[in-house]
Image 1 (tube, rainbow, N blue to C red):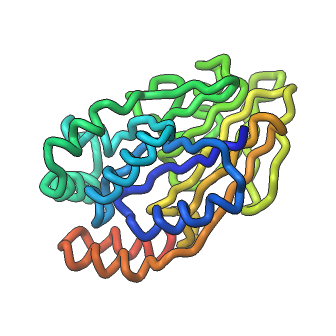
Image 2 (cartoon, rainbow, N blue to C red):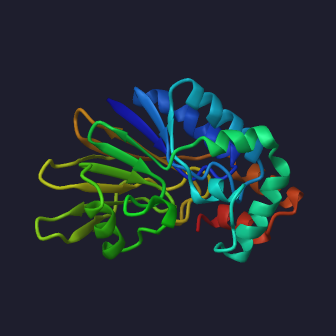
Length: 246
């Protein structure tokens, strides 16, 4: 089974549509959305509705911290994220909120686990940015392959026999074999707000039969997204981030 993995869409219509257009070339069998459909971007209602249609058609989805903040507490977010959430709440109606409320914290498919932040405590929203966080995530589940978003920078981790997490920086477009000798953790990267110095939208393709993962990128009209951000009056650093990819 070949699964397309999309994380951190963040209300970016142009990026989402570009990634969805790119997926047929990968001959995917399933789609999993790893949270943060909203937050930061100028088209939250469109993205919630588009994702809802994908879920209705069979896509898997998990809740992200920005999604949870729509009806929850955003006090632990930084100022820019809080301002974006406050604006996003004004763009969504009760129907959108009800859709988000139904999204689960994690999803298991065969030997793979999908969660937004970490398997250790999905609602703690821990960022996997180093070996300590990666080890805690991998030790918290018996899944052979765990795929997450949240960090906005693609990375691949494996847990050695000594219990040490080793990082691998993926090359976009290259299929990476996932040895059965190790548990693996993939950080997908972001559809709607990359932070690794590239403006192109990120996604991943997980092949459970062949045990490979591919990290993909696709360019999109981020200038249009930036214009929409500015017209909406959202914080300027969000526009700059899309222009710089970090």
